[in-house]
Image (tube, rainbow, N blue to C red; front, side, top):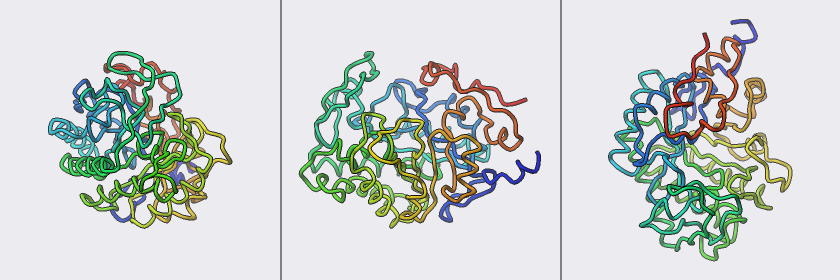
Length: 367
């Protein structure tokens, strides 16, 4: 290791809100990999995949649905049954034995779903009956057009928040070190936050304060089961994925961060980078903007390289940086950065969601 690598701030420890100690500032970003099978039960292959990446300072699991209503992806895992909880326990045990720290990302797809995922629940749900404009969705019966979602009734909204509470309880039973609330990328929480997708006239719609209320209900529900210092929230203020982007995005996400600051959360995780798409409705929001209103740890994400991640840590705009695609083909990403070894090329997209072991836990470490 040369002097430059030894001075790398990415490799220094960091304690998130006195509760979670990360051995370095490199986080494994949550990435849907679709290996949980038809019953959405984490398995031995997944345990090996996460074990291989346990040198990350912080590991955030792939998005995990909190209920059958929340399903919107083929073969993604769940956390609403005993079998799923036991499956995740196997994964977490493997990670802990390897010295890792791992959080479970809690997910509800909202309108980014299709009725064939949950025949008993019917149409996907959302804050308002506004369909995604896009090429369609991969479902259990093949590629289908997006459907117009059903707007949740006011009394149903708290039932969804309660599903998050039960999921947090199960995450503790599985042994996770905490949870991350997925409020990004055009899924249900993001749909409630943004004026593009929320046209409600009740206490969950209209003003920014009302549109934020659903996320606040969920934070309260989750923190009733585990300490706030073990709970993170992920937001994507600049994102366009799932047909998102609102003219008042800066006001909306600034307000949300201000409100979340009251809880003493483990961190706020922001998809601030533009590699995942940008709505171009104003200048992109930066980590520095969020530093002014959120005083806990910040995690940046979205197209960072080791060099740009190091710069963000050094300048103080972020406390950790989450890497996504590089971690697919570089299970030893921390070691490669520490030793100055070259990174393997990004894995081709056709293996990201394959329902088999290929392109998953079979990437070699550097030799």
